[in-house]
Each structure stands twice: as structure tokens, then as C-alpha cells.
Length: 317
Ligand code: TXA
Ligand code: MG
Image 1 (cartoon, protein in one colour):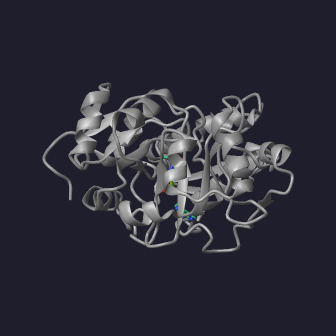
Image 2: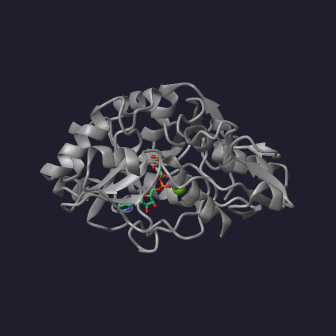
Image 3: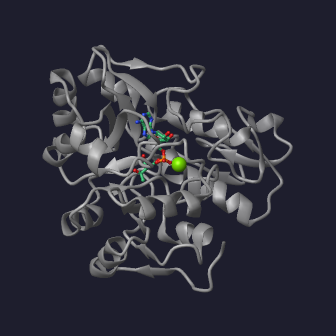
């Protein structure tokens, strides 16, 4: 499906907005990973996202809006959900990168393309923090549906160059907003019931969320089907990954964590935020270098380590 043009990395909000208004997807920076955005009210534009990604149409998209107020147009928030939304979306220093799943409003079911929600009666909403993405949302007068800007099942992009490598000739523009601050996708929380349930761990950790919402629960990844797109194989590089390998056991290219001898280190100072930031870039580098088999040092199963281990596990299938 590759077209006869080169995807341009741009800085112009106007150019990005114009393309979106004309119904063409644009890759956009967010604080988690880069997204492939399109007008959520335009079915043709949304279908182009699925086409470009090679994504199955039963896998719904996250809808990005400028503010909580705007989110209330598209999602029904009960009292508890509203409290969570206010805390995760309105407090600048707390729990960044959170997506909330709520029931659709009547307006959403009438105005949003049904391809966005894959025909479900719930919607995943996110108010991003990345300044450039926020500005873009304020320039266009529609919400932006956006999955991660990679081909389906491959590693999410954390820079404009990553997107260009994956989608060159498939989309007109990548809006450059620098390296993604977190480097992991958003944490998705289902807030439809009394007990909020984390469907996918990401840039907001379980421990941080628990500190705020004591009754929050973690859905076990074994409960398949809660997040339709979260298949066992996902975020997958070409290289074979062996997990939890100690330095003395390793016979392959070695990805370290902490002060160990290795070929590449996710974080020499054993810092989980830094490891999350480096994770996808490192997996991409392995593919670029055509590394065939890789051993990865154990990552502690706490804080962001849980999300890192989740991604590594899916990447190793
Ligand atoms: O950080 C992120 O979340 C990035 C940026 C671009 O926002 N987006 C992202 O989108 O990672 P994607 O499509 O790669 O992953 C979104 C996940 C999918 O697994 C999808 O199935 C799930 O969200 N999802 C979307 N709508 C849902 C819904 N109504 N209920 C449950 N899960 C939903
Ligand atoms: Mg994705």
C-alpha cells in the first residue's frame, strides 16, 4: 500500500491541522509514545488509521481531547469516575499518561465514527499533557482518535524518526515534538464500575495510582479480552528475546539493567523511569543492527518495572 511520496517530519501545527481537516492521519507527539491521529468524527479518516497500521478493525482506538470538559461530551462519568478524571487529567504533577474507559454518551454514539469504538458502547478517553499535541487539539475542532503510530504488533514509536521508519510513504506528516517523555503507552483504567480496574499498565504505575485511589485493582493479563487489542504477542521486535537472564548465564547479545557488563544498558543506575524511556528505542536498535537473539537482565516487578516486564513479555512471544 506504500504510496509514491515521502513522509515529512514537520514542525508546523498549521500543516498538521490542515491535513487532519482534510481527513488524512498525522503522526503526533505525546508524552507517552507517538500516536497516529485522525478526526474521530470522520469515518474515512479513521479507516485510514486502520489501513496504515494494518490493524484489525475490532480493536478500538483511544480518543484524545483537550480537557476534561471536552471529555464529558463523549463519555459518561459517574461521580467516582469524575473524581479520578479530575485527579489524573487536571493535576500537572500527578499520574501522567492515563486513559479512562467510560460508557459512550448519546452524542458520541451519534457523532463519532463507530470505527473508533469498534462498535462497543464504551470509549477510551485521554487528555494528553504534551504541549504541542495540546495545541493541535485546540486548533482543530474535533477530537483525535489515535493509536500508537507503529505498524500493528510492532514496537511503539518514541520519536519522529521511529514513526518515519515504520510508516514512510503511508502518511503525509509526522509532527515532531521531540522524544516521548515516558516512552511507554498510557495506563488504561476502566472506571465504569465502583472499583476502578487497570486494563493496561503504562506510564502511570500501579503503586502511584494506588496511593491516590486505594480501591484500584489490577486486571490480570490472563483475563483475555478486557483490552481487545492486548494480544499476547505485541510490541514485538524481530529479534528473539530471552527474559530474566543473569549476566553469567548470557550467551547472546545482552541487554542490561543496573551496573552490569552488557552490550546495551536500559539503565546503568537501575532507574525504572530511565529504563522505560530507553526500552522501545533499544528494541528498535536491535532490529536495526539485525541482532538475532537477545538476553535481557531481570527487571524488578515494581513501579514502572511492571509495565516494562509486561511489554518485554509480549515482545518475547
Ligand atoms: O499512550 C497511549 O495510550 C498511546 C497514545 C498515542 O495515546 N496510544 C496507544 O493506543 O497506545 P493503542 O491503540 O496502541 O492502544 C490502545 C489500547 C488498545 O489495546 C485498545 O484495545 C484499547 O486501548 N482500547 C481502546 N478503546 C477501548 C475501550 N473502549 N475499552 C477497552 N479498551 C480499549
Ligand atoms: Mg499500540
